[in-house]
Image 1 (cartoon, rainbow, N blue to C red):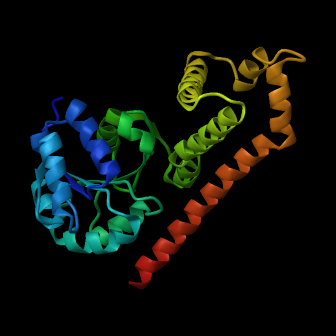
Image 2 (tube, rainbow, N blue to C red; image 1 turned 90 degrees about the vertical axis):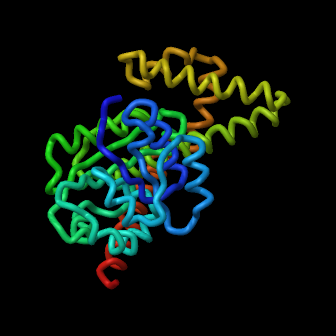
Length: 279
């Protein structure tokens, strides 16, 4: 942990907290982090107590102290936030954006200067250090800027560098992905209750089943379909269960789910850009 850059976090929600937790373990000292939000002072005080980070009364003050700016507010608030901090942004700042649907070009334009911007799409598993994060650099982001971003987001999970055009797909796949898994677990828990298993026992078995399957996928070079066939004995229980999933077109539903989430990311991004253009 030898990063001496000061980081300003604009926004203090759950994703900001997950990043603080990760960064203070493996990227920088808490003294090099300053957090600001729009109006919730008790939340800033809570983060300061828990992690030892600094706080600022306003975003402009935080930015003036920083080398790296992390935009972690709600996407709809980006124009207001950028307008407030733009006079304090320097050309040597690096901006990291967590804002779904907001392009690096939009942030560059709102900053009012040619500035390196790296856009990131983590997911909520960052809270336990297991995020799947994709990052993409803007026009003025050099290799070293992407490397800084990669090191920072690796404190909360794995990182993939992708072209910015792929971030909508990433949003639909891994950004929203934890919710799909939670939805599956909801169904498994309901099924467990229906077949008479105690809730606590069922939960432990379900969670370990998912963790074990994920570890098998991670450790094996085999395609998921091969691993599935290896546990599907002809005429057995697994084959009977898979048959029902096929009857309900489970795979088609998952594919349609991810496609729709991707399209929705594109729709929200376009609407946000239009709103910013009109402002």
